[in-house]
Length: 468
Image 1 (cartoon, rainbow, N blue to C red):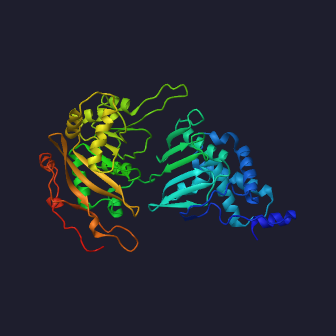
Image 2 (image 1 turned 90 degrees about the vertical axis):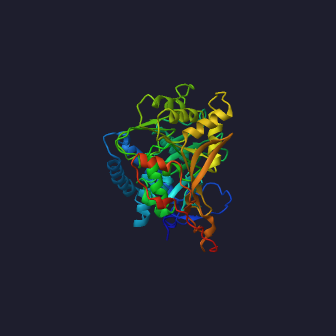
Image 3 (image 1 turned 60 degrees about the vertical axis):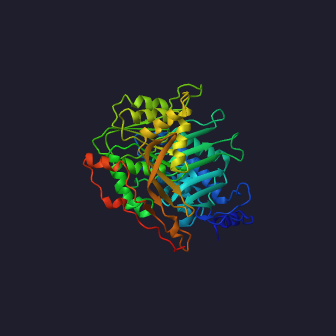
């Protein structure tokens, strides 16, 4: 007999049906109708009372900075056990563990999202409304049966997240970008902009930064590509990482930054700090939104300009999405070699066109040819990522920017993805990036710097036909 049935039987009433394993498992993606809020069962009522009692017992210890997170969680578990004992409700060991976990997550964590944040196989969490939560696992969208108890519960979690990074969200500022302690990216939007209830999207980052061997094992890179990119970073080529949303640009930017020699001074500039650089000589800068009076905003563009006075060996911009692209290109053209940034684009050619558009957003009345000359002289390499239909993220192009021919920026692919290998029985792509056989012009620069690479990297490899 379930907890709800035992409690209702003890009260002399009919048993209330309990959702099976609510919040415990992930179910396949389905289009489900809006069923509204789940009925509040007996366990939920106990959870609500226990949470309130735990808040009262913890008191000022919740904000005690001398307590570590683990110490606070242990105190909370001990206090919560006492609270549950005082309830004098018969619970199975499994129900007791679940109750302690859920209440602990509500009080100290992020409610029903905490278990998904703790699951390393989940890469993205999407809350459409309080009773609808989706996750991404292995590149596939899945609907969960986790839910918030109410809109107010969801709002409290959102406010807890944004308050930790000094941001705010309310009716006057109903959308916000923030981050979690581990750097995971957070976007929240609340009513009246979000019609069906507050929406929250969390893009998780690995607690342990991914390395080159990790990307090679995932099939994102090949060893030949990794060797070339290592040489390009050490040779201080200016690199743009391009790709669509969710293709892994920030992850690849982290990996590229790991090639930077440890003695060099790095300045990173981001909207919300996400990069996980392993070097020690790093200055991390983060933009700031306007305050409630609409003042005090510090933009990416201002930070890029300021970074030029900080004696950087490398400037790493998390993403260029506006007028700061002009300042970034000027920095690349005025002695700050080895700079790296990302941009949203669908191909290397689109990346060049998008940079042109972003420069125009700087408000400078520049002729298009002048902008293209800036791009062609500043950027040496474009590394393009794509998210394939099977959910995998692959580097599909490593492209050299060779210069101008007439009015056109000339690009030359060094590596491209081989789609001709087809897919396996599970729909996964069998292909991998292969060399085009064309040696980039910048490879001659490596020898001048004493950087040796295997010439076989650029040896052409035949496309694998007939395996579809």
